[in-house]
Image 1: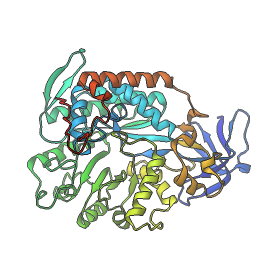
Image 2: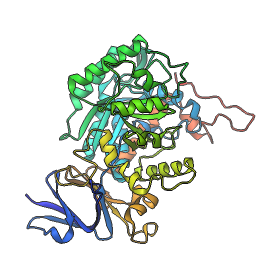
Image 3: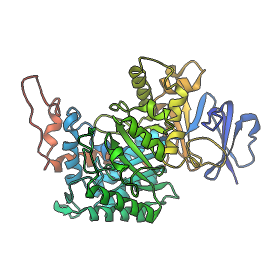
Image 4: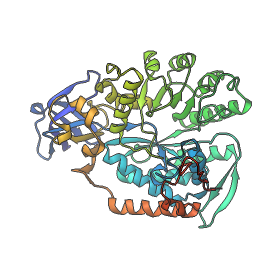
Length: 488
């Protein structure tokens, strides 16, 4: 079978030996890596496609283990109202989005990730998971499939209170209804049935409750006096999630903050902890909760800057920690290289500017092989090794900000940005070559994204606010309060 050979590259393998091969090559046959080694060892055969990577890096495709579907088309909205952001955008998602919105956003977010060399991305439907209409997840995944990317669609029940009001727009006019916890689970199951394993296995579904313990604050630290014992709702929630995950053999993902982990561990039968789940955030967790994560083999994913996330302390206990974008609203991006650098910078500041913490090689691990491990996919992706899936990115190092041509890992983490990515392969197929997207009309996709974003703003009654300077700020001056829009 003809091969694709990436020749004359500096190959950063992220294999167990962490080899960096100068004048290296990667040979791909079908959807797998056939060999990784010196260019002199990779003799092309008749029919092989050879890609000259002189002056370039070949790295494993980057892995973003936590991000949000929908966010790319609401960026900027409420960007300056951090304490109220969730209260503003969640009603927008739950009452003003259409099926067309989710597919258009999937294309825009997929393009952003692709251009930044992110070959596998986690996408949670909405800020708070919305699963009442499985077509939201289907449309989003359809866009990633068209682009040729890997996507993990995360869908599941929202937190308390149940039931919750939603608005559907299938008829073109708003129809409000109330959905129960059971209906949320039914919608998640329908998405699993339709999507999991589709796209030649590139599309997966993880069951994603908003948090692992719904009875306490879903987005902030809960002190010991606030997080005392599990409620019956907590236990029923965990049991239902575990039963559905077991039924289909799928993994879990969720958010957790101080208090959640200690409470969840009280449920010895169905705790949403363990090697089949990765938890985002983990702000302010206690030493006891770190011990629980280590004991249960739970992975953690972290987006900088984070709030009081004990990253070093978790890693010291052997907990796998990966860096994520948590993209992209209100003001984030899917550029995982820039996110990784921000993570490193924040940790240096927190650790008294001690640069022995998180050297570049470790940071690169946290967006490749460690992220793959968090997703339970380290045997398939995250490093360039024979037998693994052929997911890789080619990075042009012949730019002023990447000069001089030494210390490639240092330069990648310290100076690299998503726009340095030149070519991307996923599953053995090149889906961006020489910075040209091969599978879709990028100009039209972005135009459609803009149309759907503006239609959303119109439905939500927010259009006039887009033209107000500084809209979203709580105060125009120190004295003059600004009223926030009514989204309900």
